[in-house]
Image (cartoon, rainbow, N blue to C red; front, top):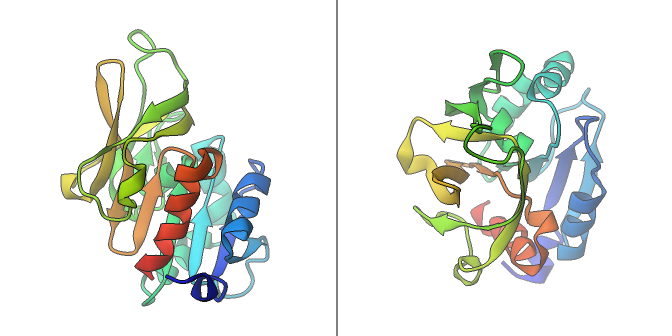
Length: 211
């Protein structure tokens, strides 16, 4: 998609009150998206791309989403044509059916599967730092980022029920976990593209081709 076309794309970032939005907002603005933080939920989510970011508690984030009826709004958003929902880190985990964090907590149930905690007896938890991603089904990644490292910071990982929805996986110790997913117009990255330098920005730019 051309730079001119990207400037026409309205991108909204959901404010979950649990993280710093500046890095993702600034990254999207630098790419050229017409970007803004979404914190008024009385109206319809009138955007082309919605980003659900997150660093923090799955349970707290879901409580916040339910409080403002965002679960229904996000579901309705995904039913629209030429729209895209992107979950980043905790935002990707929220797309799933449930998480083991602080007991069982229901998620948005947009992706079949669960969110599990890393085994702290076998791995250093949280998983923080730079790691590779390996392609399983290259649905939305530009080919020139596949040998690059991306930034992770998380204690939980996603287990999709449908393996064909896994876009990439990442190795951490002896564990191979899902690091990005795609289902129709819903995508998610466990890594932070906005904190992963030029390769991450290329991914954020490339998703414009999916709408």
